[in-house]
Length: 337
Image (cartoon, helix red, strand yellow):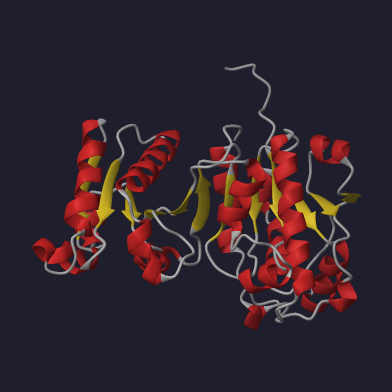
């Protein structure tokens, strides 16, 4: 029998997301979930005034102690769920379900605070509730989403978005850009970069020889060049380069058959060329419990795979399954749990 002391669950920063969305409700549900407390110590970074309004409106509990966002010691020593009050927004001014610049500013501050806590070692990882891109834009935030914000705040230059679940894992070569820009951004170097980041993450999950499937850009993988030459001139050479580096890679495969059950059984992760190519099959299979993981950062970051759901905001009807899964994945990838 081992006499080793029990391992302390990792502290995971949990950002509240856009105050006008479902983020506050999801965070309250996550703080109270026994399965979360068993795996980690959630440190919720947000605004306690908003949380109190949401708790009163939805009937959810708000029972964790509160500290200010300048109280580094409280964050670094937390052994039970803790709420970090940023005081970023007047709770009375928040209109649930509406796009507001003040909410965008507040959401950015929560992310900034969590990143600093990760970099300083006060928490082992961070998980994020959803933000609203238009609210961020109105607030003057130049980055369009979490992935770009986190790269900016950490100084990371090679990052990518990976969506993970037990059913399917997908990484994206391009993220939040218009479809017309995608062909110009799909380069062999970027494909290789995303595939290698994905393979490294899979190895951390225990998959020693990960199998990757690379999706084509064009219908029928270009049909020999009839529908575009990107698959022949860019994607196929990238696949060859990855194989030369010792990775198990298939592709480019036509996207309309790449995600069928037989192919999924032979694939540990997909490399998709653009957002909807990867997100449509992923959300069909794992919408309730899928997790967004940012690869290439100097910190561990996970997130829900859905948006702010303004139509459900503050109504007590939002599912926290994806956020709870995000906390589990954050603890798993932190190397502590």
